[in-house]
Image (cartoon, rainbow, N blue to C red; front, side, top):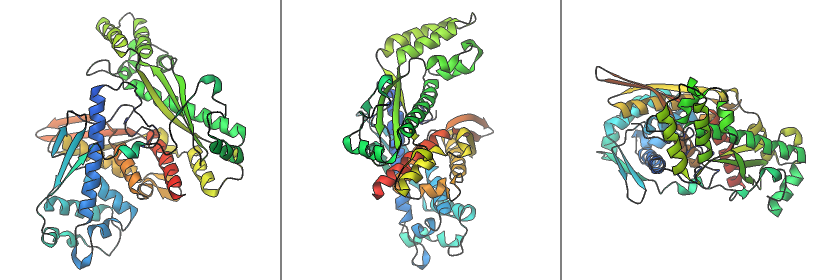
Length: 438
């Protein structure tokens, strides 16, 4: 079984990309999702720690591995993808709800991966593949073992702009949800119509994301709501019907960028009830499934499912804004063509987990080559700071295993991922970097 954070194509990654939501999107998260979140955080921490340990290793001619990996964004991205493909040596779920993940690499493994990165991603002449042959000897190395903890990345998940402010459909356009300083910033740099368009865009983004989350809701161990929506039993209407209970519940304006975040939520009881209604319209609907939905309606009580969307002021409605503020807003309102597509990675391994991580690595390598603008790729964006690396590592864990085969001792997997959440992450991390530079 693949352990990943796939609630809404990566619940952790989709806390609008590690910067938006101060709390989980489901007010009453099932224990299985808690474990998946803890595992994801611990694994990211372990990968980051392993990267740092390996980059400190010495090479010949007074160089370090870090000198090699930092030679270009492409080389560093390839190295990060390689380390992210290391299979867990040990996973420990603690009674407190926390998780520890241990990763290990031998000198042979490290040398092999560095040579692979050199062959596939490095384009310079300073380093040769043979430079990695004496890593064990130069560093008196036997094994590199690190343990990551789910505690480590908690601070990364906090929004830099404070908590959401409660909001309703009747007062979405009001400026009362801003602090005095934030209101002054927006009135100075954004026309009123531009602010309202940003709110509308954030709402549309939130509903789109909420629909993705609803599709992943489980009806039983093997079936999700999305399975019914894609099948003939649900009839017509489908997602538009399930979004009827959605209500605006929170809003947050950035105090230093022309970006707004809007949260929408829906009662799980209402969502399950509408799924039941859709199925009951079909005379061939499975009665057992309907009974399970009725039980879910009772057990969910007052729990909600929520999602946060992002919107930015269009360029023509920005006035007298600093260059970097206008630039972030422009990027936010000018998404690349790939955001509406999926990417797929295929890999093989000695077991299922190894095959899945190999496929994830291939997917990672494709993603970092995507262009954000004419002058910047996703790989270059990732190389900006550690926070971006953490965000990317978290995001990539949200991939869905779309195919798996085992034949004659060979394990093969295919992992696919929708790219719209990646765009959200880039926008929100760009905002975070802007705030950090101030």
